[in-house]
Amino acid sequence: MTTLDDVCVAIVDCEHKTAPKAESGHPSIRTTDIKNGRIDFDGANKVSEETYEYWTKRRRPMPGDLILAREAPVGEVGLIPEGIFPVLGQRTVLLSPDVSKVVPRYLHYLLISPDLQHTLEVRSAGSTVHHLNMKDIRALELPELPELPEQREIAAILGALDDKIELNRKTAATLEAMARALYRSWFVDFDPVWAKTEGRPPAHMDAATAALFPDSFGDEGLPVGWEVKSLSSIATFLNGAALQKFPPKESEDSLPVIKIAELRNGVTASSNRASADLPAKYRIQDGDVLFSWSGSLLQKVWTNGSGALNQHLFKVSSDLVPKWFHYFAVDQHMEDFREIAHSKATTMGHIQRHHLDEAMVSLPADEIISAADRIMSPLFERIVALELENKTLATLRDTLLPRLMSGELRVGEAREQAEAVA
Image (tube, rainbow, N blue to C red; front, side, top):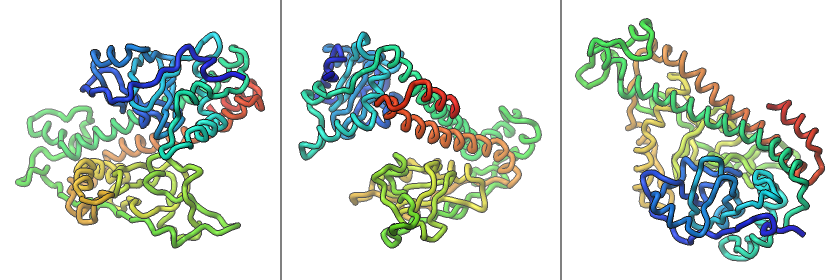
């Protein structure tokens, strides 16, 4: 029998207190920063160099080590990549693999495989708040490990899929940032108009497009010829249905119910189901824009397949402006909406319809919208395509993972399948 303790040179618990935050520095990894087998270093809190030195005095988390969540969510584990030197947040554990016995990335995939995730879940279920104790972590039984060369091959196959997923994710984030910056420049800060008022040609713009913008502002501070419209007047905000009225029926098609949890984490086995025989307007398809107006306010272009729109979510669409325009128009007001929701003296803060009536956006002539659309629509379509590709890659990875770990699937066969998709 091989245990996790047998294949690690060290298994180190966290400090059981919160490290003081800093504006910049080393990432401090909380359990919520570990999700779906990866660590979100960009979104993590930061600590100073002084705090880093104190917090890592027992052992420094190094590239190639793993961080395991002991609680909330139990069993999530991620690998520390090259160039990252974090500290442990509360309820996390550092796993330092013995590279003479196990390839770190192979151990990572082994720990996120369904069998070991189930074992960790069972081990954690003995208390009111599910958590893993250090004794159980050290004693976690592992299946027989293949030789190191085969471990490296398996890790390389699965890793290539994850690397492509991560590259796609970063590319999509970069494209969205570019699109958001252009929207803000043209439609919020009016940079092209300001340039023309100062006798300068607008930056990064051809002469034909620049000619579409006015060279002065009106009395209300808007570019001449532009108008102010409310969010509710440029787009339709369809609230979801009370889907308990459409329960799934045996031997009939059903759809996953899309709630705030699904908007954040995607459809899972625990997602509720609804009858597919519901009004068409409440069906969700890839590419639809969804906006949760209560609880955790967020907006997302949906890429998780067909679903049923639940209450507390808007499906946002428009016959007046392109999808990217109303997406970034909502995004423009999101911080204000979150402040409004936070100020509500209720268990679940929310915004109301009148807040959409009161949130204003600047609307130019159709020619300027069309000029922006020639740039923005391809960016938006590429973002959606990358996210859909990631779903395919993740499905393949999740299919190959348990079969490779159990020995059911040979390495060569798995490589062929991965190469065919990639």
